[in-house]
Image (cartoon, rainbow, N blue to C red):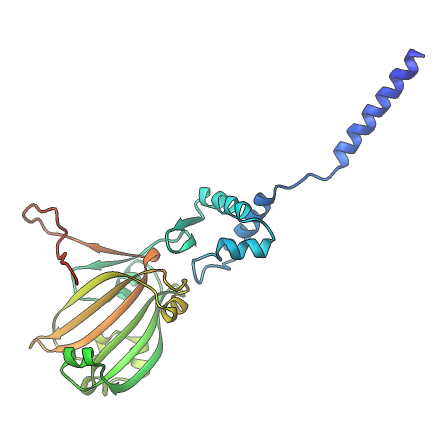
Length: 267
């Protein structure tokens, strides 16, 4: 009887082994979600905004817990594909758009020199009554206001609004300001400009144009440009997404100080 029992045991063992070999491999949920997100990123699904949906939105999309979603995102973070940023959530890892300060010029010139294709999309081109602050700066009552979105390789990187006196603006057309910078168009000898940069939060309109969430960190820059006689001929506001922008300043050798050059307190 003993050989029979042994034979039966061997048969049972072989059957169990065969079942294990034929059974489907159980997938790990967060790994599957990370793979799905990786494919979306590769296909450029999030490239226009550079910001992924929130963990809550992804949780609904994949019918998974936020803990699972976060672990999938952390996997992509470890691969260098995404990053978690305060106030923004999860973003694609993209190179910052640098702008060198210290000379009068345009960021488009710098992008072109770096091999980046830049473009402008004009949203508004209007002659209108100047807002009180703009009227005081330009010393005029009527202005040309141009609002545009600047693009780098097809993706938005700035919302820009420019005001100039009506007498200067009348020489320009919408197609002019879409093709070229104001510095190239106004044909006025320039003395220089003053630029201020401050941290701020994106308004709902700015967020929509930049492809970020309302309230996301932005850098808000104001530039006042004067002609050789000291008259203000251009005033512009530039809004850059904080996670995609860096400003580079070359400082000359000066007396030792712990305070950054140009730093001042604001009310």
